[in-house]
Length: 481
Image (cartoon, rainbow, N blue to C red; front, side, top):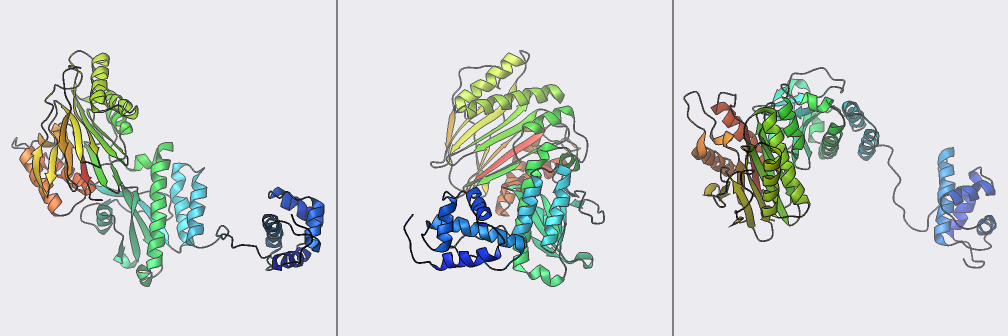
């Protein structure tokens, strides 16, 4: 604090505004003190009288105290600050709508998300509906609570909303005389559905700012769908086409999101039949330096198989999170299966870990179909290393195999339910058909999430829509940075 100094613009403005603030000196000092000010009442009075000058930070706190009072009185006069300050929280416009939704969702049950999102959308001047994809990724089902007329589920294949889901690119529509913008609902890289935004006029569909704002809203709604879903059943119930068996419920609760990505890696997985799966599961973990992947297939069916594969997944995940490598993860799975289940119980599977910097892939294959390596759009190799027995039968005497990948390579881990699906004539889907399908998908430029979805549809169609065994797949693409 200095001695008497000439008054500056801020101090003069402070004095002028203070006269309009309807505050006593003591009331001003109390507001200033509550904001963190340290000067005593006499110093504040001397600062206002120009007898001495407080440090800039104290002058700014006094300005905040007076301006807040002027806001209460709806007075336009403002005290200048010594430096530019960030703008206050917006009360109108797109950012205000986003903040409003974010604040309200903190204490909202899952079934209130759609009404909250619809209220935020009205600030943007649009009416919205939230359509989530079912677990089989065949239909888009509208969540209740938006106040719009009811509609039937929309197919993912062959419809414009379905195309938005498949490509994750927004598209306009004028169908039925109602101008709409369809926006993908994506949490990170995980596709959850589409947002339907009904705009006032056809010309609004060409407004790039409105498209961007609807994109912001869709991103937040997708994130809230993913985070709020674990707190209730309404969102999960909507996504189910048929009731799940207890075994399927157990397995799905252990799975990570179906799709994930970093700037250098993208992977996607899927299980079928989604409502009756029991013995299959997959897992992954992404980091800056490594990508870990695993797929398991437990013997048998029903809840017993579900318990076994859940135990195998938990054992591998526990060892991985403890920082142990592929060999120790495999030993952990062996130990938990052999110690927990009957002598003849076993789990087949693949554990793999990619070093992103070098492309070195280390893996253990235990009685499981070999992973496929795609390069330049075709299957170039089956990874047949480590020909060891299934997990749980033997806990020693195996090695970790290695393979060097290149940027752009695809790695496909799958269970035998994919290749052993039989049509009415008894013909298997087979490894050759699988390799051809993957090659066509790569040539068409389909990303892993859409390739996985279409592959599972093809496997189901091959077996007449009803699989006799669990089928799962985990597909990863190492992208060029």
